[in-house]
Image (cartoon, rainbow over all chains, first blue to last red; front, side):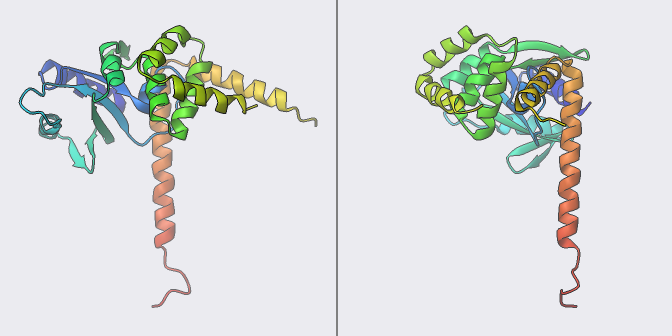
Length: 173
Length: 58
């Protein structure tokens, strides 16, 4: 499975010291908890050493993966035939999400994934229609920890967005 | 045949619960198949759009 090859590459990048931490997010991350939804790319949140510069540069990550066979395509790196987008942790919520990422194993391949409560909070923060649909699916999943999610919305200033989302959902059958 | 919206929604919900409970490896395989299907549709649409039409100048 191509996605497992990507997870293996990410683990190698951590082992080689290119990234400090990473976690799978977006639709691929959500698939670990809810039903799969078609997506064209893989979102990877990363923390890496930026001590050399005040600007966030993904150059070391791009250099590393292109040397291992990845191809640059617009804002993506194509790894194992999937466009992969690396997203630096630039908000306190994503920082926290990376600290609390969940280690999983798929067919024996280790991978770090954002927790579903953090994925839901990131979806609420991002706020596109597909994020709202994903958020409603998280809320309906039997394993979602609502108290943990509520704490995240309060801590990261998302209560107004949450209130708007609840009002939107109240209009649905 | 009678149609019940409540019953249709109940079946949809049950299907979603079953899909959510599917093993992660299987769900990731489904994700890959969904992407392949999307790509095939896009390729077919592009091929259709690029096909010369009868009215096109020679």
